[in-house]
Image (cartoon, rainbow, N blue to C red; front, side):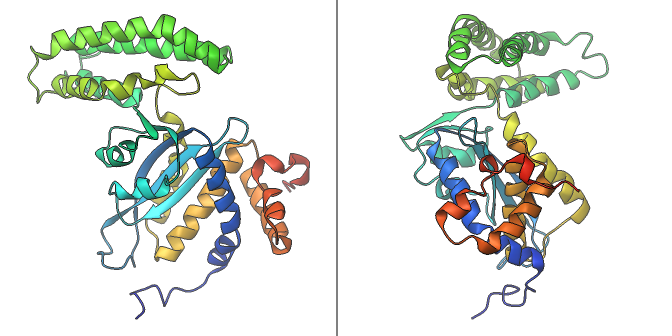
Length: 314
């Protein structure tokens, strides 16, 4: 029996090209899973012909960023669900650090003893930003208790900015964080524990404090390894082109179509992360893929294997 919409989907040039790049996407996933750090996030997408779902309902594009520093990988994967079973499936076989926002759907995969869950301080900071905004137009002049948290978090980010500007090694990042960031974090936690008892939990400040303390073990995990980041912003930035595009095209027609888009978005963002002009890289791919038959052939087409001089930007 043919599922609704799937048997009738027209095989467009985009679908054919997406199928041709699947071996390349599979290789990229190997590099992603073999490295010990993955950042992950998800965003909504509407698919008109998703079986057993209303055309107006939300499905999800899951985005993963990882790979070695000199071989960055960004992959997009479509799933109809936002359930915790999805990241478990996508990260099957992965061992290392998984960095995400506070969405509870990641807790299931993070319960795996081979995976260490790392939080996102940007989300904690946004909660305190919202608490200041809740004070009204004069909030930024007299930010109150929320402002105290933002000052401490700002000091943490100043350390990270300095490390980036100095292009610090992982070892230096680790040592600097232990010496400079850890005392600030200790001060922030002590302040939060003292403050929360006097703040109504349903206020914006109460929500921010509860988020900070309930996610604390994951938020400070970035201290454990110099390769880790203080937040998940890098993968959120990788999602942004998809979100901007969605405002224009609004929805995908079929499941095959949205999976095709996922493959192509992944290749584009991975090309950009490796310093390649994405359109030139795709054009090069689609001229070389017809003759690719072996694993070595596909390996030679990975973004970090392609020389910029081979790409025509005309």
